[in-house]
Amino acid sequence: MTKSPSSKPKVPRVTPFATRGITKRLRGSKIIYEQRDELAMDLLGLYSAKVTDVVDIVHRSDGSTSVDLKDVGDIPENALRAIRKIKVTPTRHGEQVEVEMIDKVRIGQMLAKSAGLLDNEKEVDKPGVVSIEMVMPREEGDE
Image 1 (cartoon, helix red, strand yellow):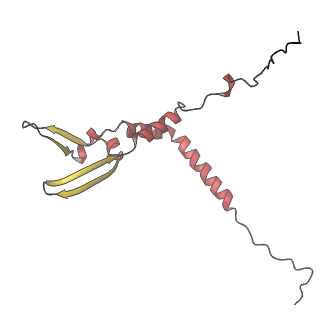
Image 2 (cartoon, helix red, strand yellow):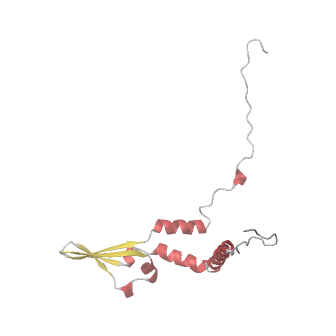
Image 3 (cartoon, rainbow, N blue to C red):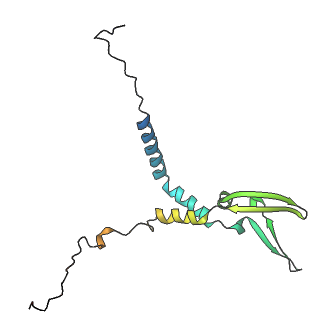
């Protein structure tokens, strides 16, 4: 089977999938940039949440201490968003409840980085060229 000289092999059409991903990322960055104040307030709310916003520590008159969960209506919104996991385990003495909060260190790092507190030193204060002068010891015959 011979091919005619006028028929060129068909090149498949390439869709601009790579540019679509870049455009999507840029659009996401634009949305984040436009909502930066609300995002910062949400991060500050997560960072300020404490476990005592979720539980009550009760000191009883007999000297014992118990930890009770607060009602959902009594927990601030930022503390509810800061809860990573709640685990309930049945025991002989009732249910054992574990409340795990988000990583506050990571949130603090994100806040510090966005505020510019973790930026590296500027290179302006560092010398560009260092001069090293070597002095050789004199020999007895040289003066």
